[in-house]
Image (tube, rainbow, N blue to C red; front, side, top):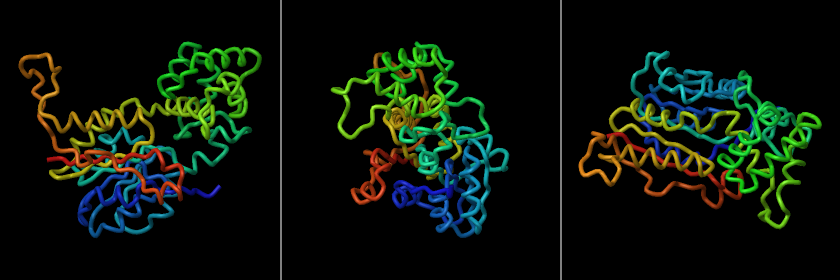
Length: 309
């Protein structure tokens, strides 16, 4: 399958970086190279570090980006500090992180991300070198843990029913495919409560994907490290696709831009926290109606930008 992905908020995110032609930039989730290619177009003697945990995505990026000073790194973006240290880079001028799943990952049945691919294996790994898969989670996790994952990561109000029915079904035979899991979910979610146009399995599949890839683990720490690695006036741009991620990004940026983060009931400041910069986006940048029409998967995207001072 040919690697294909439409980069979301492409022009907006590149403009947000305010690129210095001779600077150093990091695309933390290079994917097929859409954002990376745009960054390179604006570089003269600058350097681009292209990171991705999906080796297939990184290979596609290598094939696309054949000119300029590009350092390709197979790694989780949350290892940003270690990646830059390994390259002998201390500070950078800009960092971009697109936290979404690529269209290639969703559309490739072998990757098992989509509830529309009934025969696809329950996989959902962004990094195929890792051991844990969605099949492991569905068939081995305790009912209470499945319920917590589906409730907290999918914001699914029928999490308890779905978890209970998963455990009941797997006692008959292991759940192997996306279709088998969808059948269980559809039996667990009442027809009267289903939102028009929304698949009943959407929230559960999101939850499992987040759990398998540990998408929220270490996100706050990554954002802190990213800001520390920026030069004066350097920029951090983050695109998120669901409320759980966006909430972390929004709160982290607010903390970075605030002098004191002590609880409001303390009479004096004891945290000694000082603002590191300013949030450039008072409200998140969202895709235009035209982009949403051309790429429906972009509809939930939000771009937030922080400038280090």
